[in-house]
Structure formats: structure tokens, C-alpha cells
Length: 92
Image (cartoon, rainbow, N blue to C red; front, side, top):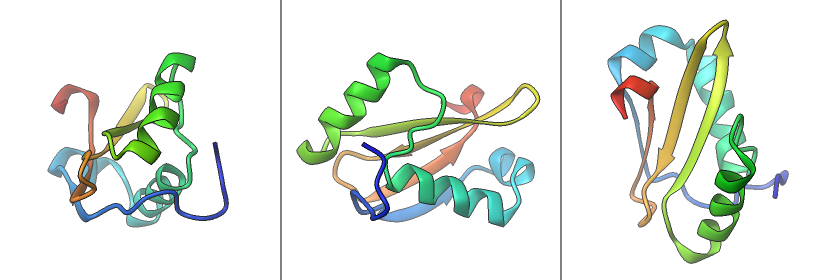
């Protein structure tokens, strides 16, 4: 479902201290851009289908990105689109 336009609103943006320490602002912005346009990153086919089901139904949206050797971040947009958070897997 990857598009060139935003599929949903991100709401308020949050990043945990650990994720902020790992990512540059440019990388965080790029990942948010990908998330909002349907590039869900490194997910299973089932998780991709869940996101594609969730976008038009205002359900939670989840992306996961490998950002370095053995490093991974999650991005979660709440079902009501009030907030999007970037966090590390161990913080989930």
C-alpha cells in the first residue's frame, strides 16, 4: 500500500529517550515519512495485511525498521490518530 502521499494523520509525535539517542533527527523524520506513506518496514506479511486493514478503519498502525546492524525501531500510531511514538523493541 506504499504511496507518495500520507495515508493517515500522525497526531502528536513522541520519541523515547533511547530511540532518540539511537537516531539522528533526519533518520527519525525519514522513518516517520515512510510509516505515514505505507512503507511498513521490516514486517511479516500478516502484519503488513493488518496495517492495510487498519488504515481505513482507524485502528492502530505499527511499523518496524532495521536501522543498523542489529538495531531496530518501532513506530506506532494510535487508533484514534492522536499520537505516534518512535521506540525501541524492548520499550514496547
